[in-house]
Length: 411
Image (cartoon, helix red, strand yellow):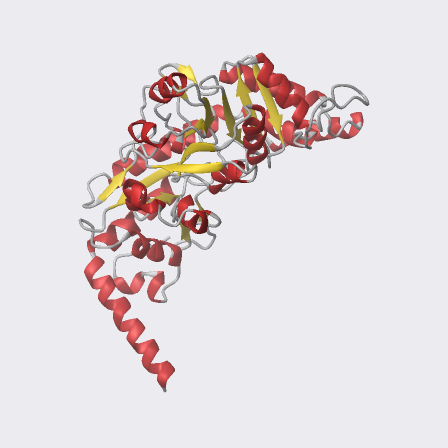
């Protein structure tokens, strides 16, 4: 990998990309492949592929221990876990939720004919701003959904107090926050329930998968029934349900990943510290910082780019990086409120989301995980530094390139 020391060296202008293989934000971590294959052979020997098999039961027990809760209900994916929790909590009418989140958080509500009422975020945490929640509460409000964005806990205490005062349910989307803590207590036991995602792009995955963590015995019982069509026995259906079960192969992958969890987190932390070291003094460029006194998975390398102070906008820098096969991502652009069906249902909601509107234009996620190490990170950072230090010259060259292309097209 040669350093990019001249404008002509950039892939944006036809030079060879810095990386032959794409560098992803969330390339799957694998763990000990041999251990997974051993478990896979055991599954075949047992011929028990799904329906609360031994590996699912073991996985639920170990994740309940890790998150410090009485109940962990494994599901086929995180979205289904959200939908089950929403239904089991008997949410109706309106539920307050941030727009700065993956669209599944809102979809899990709207899918069940519950109106997501979008709330603005705190720009310092990127999570729902509790000061903005109470003005949105109406007679139709049944709950609040907080999101632990990037794995950093949202304002749990404040949201809990608001929910208790108004007799609302509090559901927490912990899709980013597996193996993270808040004030020394593991994420999983806050609110009425917390929902996890174990999708392949998460630092901890079960191929596809998710789960609900709770200390509420009755709620856990309802979710288990709903997860399996409402069956309470061999041929006894006692409630409405769906098929949300995790299969044995996914659970085997989860158990294998648990054995490598410390290694995954260590690599993420090393990557995080190196990114901080390499990028901390760039004008208009700010890395999202984690609280190193808490347990954290450090799975996202998040930067904010301030157009007013930086020589390149977020999207201009992203274009430079993509041309080098560095597939940086702009999360959660453009915000749920600007996606369908919400932009049609609530066309004026952006006016009350000024911080969300700013943030979706500033955030960029950089590659990390076990497939990325110090050599790759230093190269990524060298390209970012070079691009930002030569931003004006770079933009002029893009303008010239565009004009030449336009002239060729006219001919």
